[in-house]
Every structure is written in C-alpha cells, then in structure tokens.
Length: 438
Image (cartoon, rainbow, N blue to C red; front, side, top):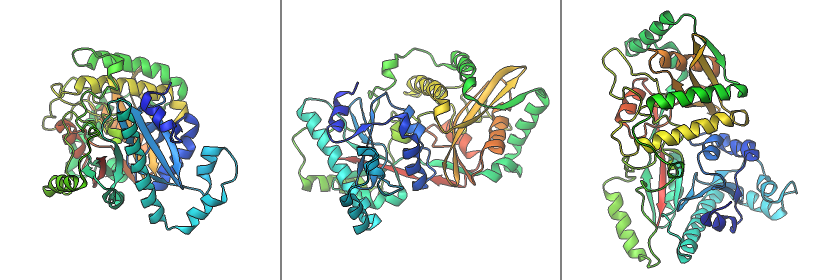
C-alpha cells in the first residue's frame, strides 16, 4: 500500500519498481558503465520497504525515486536510455513509441537531453516537497544521490543545489588480488596458507537457490554470536531519526539572493564538502551501506601486526560498537542479507559457500556492475576460523570474477573498515556525490 509521499509520485506518472523490471533497469546501469556499487538492481530493489521505490521516464531517461519516511530522493541521476522507445514501452505497454518521443530524441544532443532531464527531475522533487508541506506532511529536503563525477556539471546547473562529496569506493585490480605478490600482501598469503593447512578437508561450492534456507540458518547463528547489545524493532530499521541532512524549509521561502550567499559560504572551504560520516547513511541511496556487514564483529579493534581480524570484509566489516548507528546498522544488515538470500534466484548475484567438517562456515556473494567491474556485496564467515575470510574472498575472485576490477564499496566512515580496505591496496578511490535541493 503506497504511503502519502509515494502517492504524490504516483500522481506524477511514477509507478512502483518490481522484479519484472530487473533486466530493463540493469541495462541502464550497465549502459552507464560506472562500476559503482549503487548501480545494481538489487541495491534499488532490496533496500527499501515495499512500494517505496518508483520509476518513470522523462524523454529517454529513467528516474528512480525513493519515497519513504519523509524522504523525497532520486536514488540516481537521470539514467540514459539504452534503446529508443523503451520509455514508451514502460509507460504504455508494448505499443510503438509515439513519433513525438522519437523526434525529441533525435533533435537534441545527448547532453542537452540529459540537462533537460536533470532540470525536470529537480522540478518534480521540489513540487512533491511543496505539495507534501501544503498537506502538513513533514519531509526532508529532496536529494539526488549516487552522482558520478562525470555528471557534476549537470548538478551545478540546478539553482539552489548544495553539492556534497559522498564516501569514495575502493577499487582493486583482479590480478593483484589473485596474485597477492610482494611484501605488502605477505600477511594475507600467510593467513590463507594457515587456513588451508589447518582445515584441509574443507569444501567450496557454488550457491544455488535451494541453498538459501541453510545459509539463512547459518546467518541466524552468526547474528546470535555477533549481535551488539540491545534490541531494535523492525519498524525502526527504516526510520530517519538519525539522518542529519536537513528537513525541508517551511513555506516561508528563502530569497534567491540569500540562497546564493548561503551557497557561496558553504562552498568556500571546499568545492564539494564531504558529508558528515557520523549518524549519516553512506553509499547507495544513503542506505547505511546497504548490504554492508556493519556487524560489530567479535574483535572490532584494528588488526595486530601480522594478522587481520576475522572477516576479510570486502565491502563488509566491523564498526566500533560505540558508534551511534551500530545497533541499527547491524539489524538492518541482517534483514537485508536474508532478503537477498530469499530472492537469490531472481537476482544477478553469484556466490560461493564453504563448509568445514561438513558444516557451513561462510559464504560470499557478488555482482557484475559493468563490463570491467564486479562488486563484492556480502561476505559472512565464522570468525573463529583464522584466515577463512581471506581465503574465501580470493577463491571467489578466482572462480567468479572475470572483470578487470573489483569494487568493495565505501568504508561507511568506519576507521577499522578503512584500515582493512586499504590493506588490499586499492588502485582507485572511485568518487561519487549527492546534492540537496533547496
């Protein structure tokens, strides 16, 4: 059942995102060729509560909106269409694309169409905000999220937009992760060799849909052993109480001149200020690192010399238990990981699971995001089996990754996770941005 804000989007020609849209939406993500962890259908489909992600076409561009708990966001900037006529097929069924649509596509340059789509997107978000406020619905300021550096110029054209740099993503060369050559990878080689010698009877197999119940059972035990103190209601998993971006201003609007002055002051210290990490939701859709393992593992301290803590944690790692969001992130991650496994057969992920003494000891799942980049989404291992995480990570790359690069997403602002991700020596920190509309 749509919420009050969802209805405002529905009234503007949006419709809910469904599993049937996977191939179409994925083609847009692949077409963008960014290799960012946000640009996966699973990230858009699994993260939100049902019915809160909505899609619509403007000219030849796809818009993906989020309407939940007072949020009025585009999860991505307008996405360029893959084939002429896809927009009309989406909105009107398998009818031929109207002549006017094809004329618009052919009569404008790609940049002109994209600039127009950005402008129209901002107009839609602000109109939803204004209508919500007029109806007495409290809302946050609208945002456009997961914007690559190549599209910053289009954000700068939106009047009153405040642009912020999001957390960058760690990108590695596949061959380097396989070879682990040189002294900088010595600890990882030692950890892998130790695991292989200690558990020679382990087995690795590809994850199949029928494995989901057993993996979920493993997860429940994993969560029982690793959960932080306290409890949290499911309804709180998607609450906005910790969000630090501003509530939308009241209907008493700031003058354009004052906006310009405020914007200039905001940008004076840094062109695109880094968004605060404490209390904010990082990464895709500002989603608390979505499927990231924010799980406060048993031993969250930084690894000692010659050793790495339990999980390799690609994208997934520990955060300090004292962090203000740790409990919420832990249970949110629990919910989302189980949701991914339950929908595994419908998604594009590939995975491996490992057994030690005939019992599941861990699993890993990733997805191909572009022609040259694979994203590591989920990794869960028994933290008591030393070296298991590093071993499983490399076995997954060896068996399932064919792309040149591996992306382990951002570090969620966690110092411990930053240390772990840097220990694999990324060759690139892939930047992304978001803007707040005023």
